[in-house]
Length: 420
Ligand code: AMP
Image (cartoon, rainbow, N blue to C red):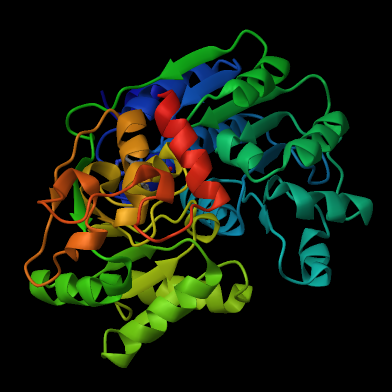
């Protein structure tokens, strides 16, 4: 199946060609025709599936078919969880809209930067707004735009929108939208809260649940390496140098850890930058641009900041700190192996995180052997239990490591592990 069979205009086909998309991805094949018929769509799609272009192309075709009568009025609203994603989605739409006979104004709206320039840019109206919910509400409170004429609403990464605590903002925004509208709903996962939201929003949706086709299935090799927590930076440095990794996205649990790990890598002349929510938007944009242009070898990121990052051909992701949940694990490793490229995801596992890793593994339906890297073998007393070779046994009631008092988190994890 080709793009030309999907009912898209020559102007959109030209933009697709310029983007070098040879054939539609499964989600595009399924979602575009349904959306063009005006149906609501419920898409189960991971990042990397081509879902952005799926809804963007459908939207643009519809806007082109129905040019505005008089003044520019907001017709499509796309809600996304993070500022990076709003910029990426906005840019993709602009790229795909570039040859349309009637120019469309696409406004990108996100928090963390001053309000006034965004208010100025919204003057004169927009055809499409891509926004994070909180900032959009601020702008609505300032009468910078109105949602009264929106005919299509897209919720992108609905699970993440709820994870990040946007439920209340979403409810306020939905109340401001016209009842008569098309809804395109995309989510990578469908926990009960996401299902409930989909149910309230969608009318008789076309369900698009696409298993990745063989040619687009990201081939992500997953490895787990046992290492003492205190030696992870050294191991990371060793792996980068040994394997000649050119571009690595490293995940850590906190902003502080992002700063510290990046700092340590820079000290050994591995060009690394932290990436977290406390950096200014300018700095984040700069880091991303440097990473994309390969001026930067390593980005050390927190989960929220890295959500939605789309860096083509990102070969390696490292879980320096393990993710909190199996869902976060999926999101993290999804940063590599995008759009059919192969990728590698490496998790560092130490004695006190092994139980947690096993939980993630179980939820993922995985079974990974814990590897040891020569020169970085864990000390016997701190060795993950599955690999202990006669070292000090690990007393589960002690939180995993002998002599360490169990924290509240340890106890919760033990309870969870026992309940599986
Ligand atoms: P998304 O799932 O929207 O995050 O898209 C992931 C990546 O796939 C982006 O880098 C897109 O540029 C790329 N992409 C989207 N559609 C196609 C296609 N039909 N063929 C190849 N790459 C695509």
